[in-house]
Structures are given as structure tokens and as C-alpha cells.
Length: 136
Image (cartoon, rainbow, N blue to C red; front, side):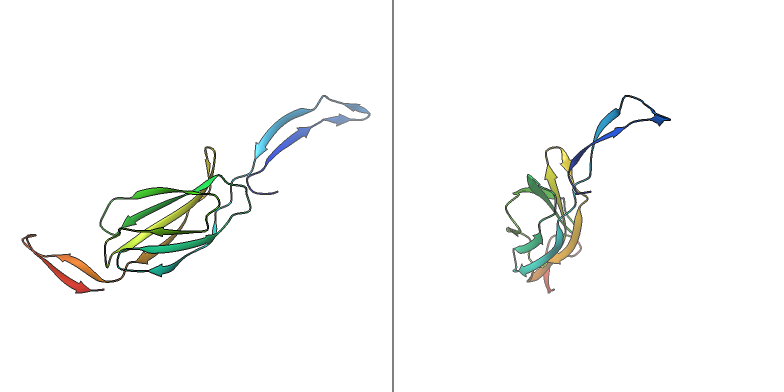
């Protein structure tokens, strides 16, 4: 079966030479996730990621990214894309990124990776009134 495809299924009971009316239903397979999700470039404030398209026809992708000590953010990406640049990120920060394919209300299983921006990471010190920069 192909990912992200709706199929019609019919079942008929047969006994001797008699056949029942068919019982039918439609069922769809799940969307397959994008493949080969990887970081292709990193700067102090940006990460560029790439992936290969899934087999299923999709309407787009949802990329979620979260810094090690922050809140998750999401971006919607068109189905034609296979790369994306996340910009305005924190220098020297490790991010967890997840990517899922979407079509309508359906979403594939997400795939994940960890990536870091370059540069100096801010380190908070007691009493949280000053910061010391530390190389990553």
C-alpha cells in the first residue's frame, strides 16, 4: 500500500454458490514522514536544514524548533520546499527541531534532530544581573 492513500475495501461472504451483498468501507494509510532530515549550515544566529520529500502527496510541512532552555516555536513550510533557514536564533544555543508532513488535518510522524548555532553562549551567573560569555 502507498502512504497517504485512501483505499476502498469490500468484503463479500460466499457459501456454496450463494454470495452476500458486499460490506464496503474506505480506509486511508498514514502519511509517511520526510526523510534524511539534517542540518546543512549553521551560523551564530541561523540554522539551515534540509530533507527529502515523503512518498505521499502533502500540502506542506510543520517545523517546530525549541532552544534548550526556551519555548517551542512553529513555522509552516510549503510542500515545494526541501530546505528551510531558521533565522534570528540565539548564538551558541542548542535547538531541538522536529519536522512533520501535513495534508489537510493529517500529520505524519515527526522526525527530529539536534543542532546548534555557532558563537558564544550566554551563561547566567548569580545573582542573574550579569552575563559571562563562554565559547561553545
